[in-house]
Length: 98
Image 1 (cartoon, rainbow, N blue to C red):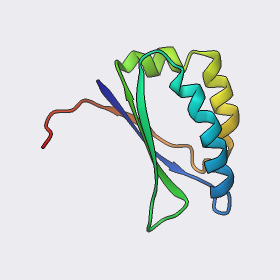
Image 2 (image 1 turned 180 degrees about the vertical axis):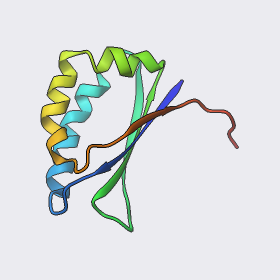
Image 3 (image 1 turned 90 degrees about the vertical axis):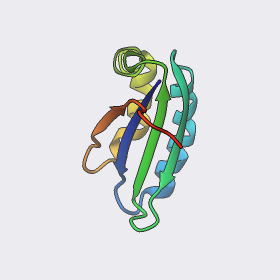
Image 4 (image 1 turned 120 degrees about the vertical axis):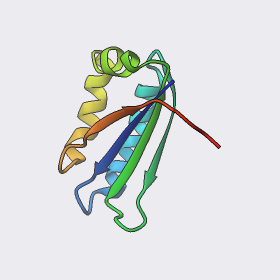
């Protein structure tokens, strides 16, 4: 399994709109092959910053499958205009748990 990590900096004052748009976009990503689940968390110290964690079966399920799909075009239209700056997305493999 692969964990996608993205810190999302939302333009201040647009947090409620972003959360509403994300609640609609969630169904788009959830329909992608290889999608296992996600969490979206809001930073307590910086309320315009969100942490998105998405679990995928394989890296390619995100980078090729989802990003190359028509669903990603809808995802992008719903969400990308909220980000300033555009987020860096990274992928992680678990090496230890407790």
